[in-house]
Image 1: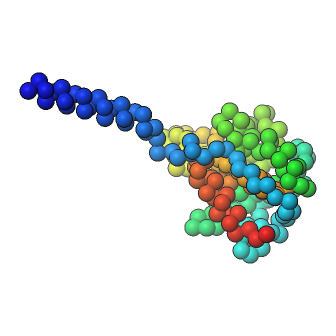
Image 2: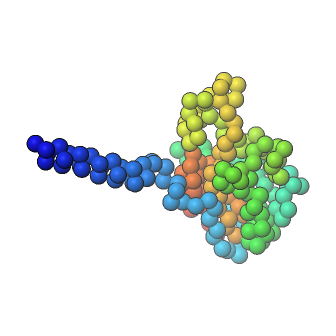
Image 3: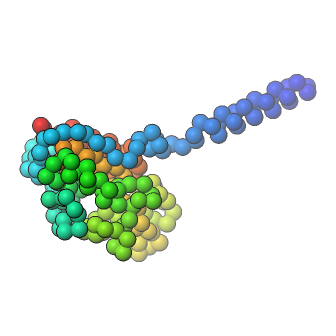
Length: 193
């Protein structure tokens, strides 16, 4: 009888250790880093995104006065199964786009880098379009719900990841790094060039 209890105890201990060391998180974003760079000398314009087959719908153009290197910044969406929001920043060259990465991380970086308060952010254009509100009970990464007026908080960025390709930077909506990068890839797979 003692051996049975010993075997059960050891088995439970091993299962506990294995369960704790397996990561225990359903968030696959730890395998995906923030930002992806695709080196290219191709020069893109808004027309490459608004035409078929990409069909990006431009909602707003932001002033680039606060963005060194940037020529244009557009906010809009592309409807897949659901509409996905994007911000596209255009530059003169791939090198200029790479130089613009630091300010992209104010909107699609790590928790420490993201700055959504107009008193902290360098690029303040369209900050209210970037903020993702969630209800008090959802927590980060949860389903958008509630809102600032009913116990919610608008402190998270809707953009979790981005791609620098050629002369543009694409910021993509997503609940975590992986979902955001998937939304970037979905749009970029439609881009012809």
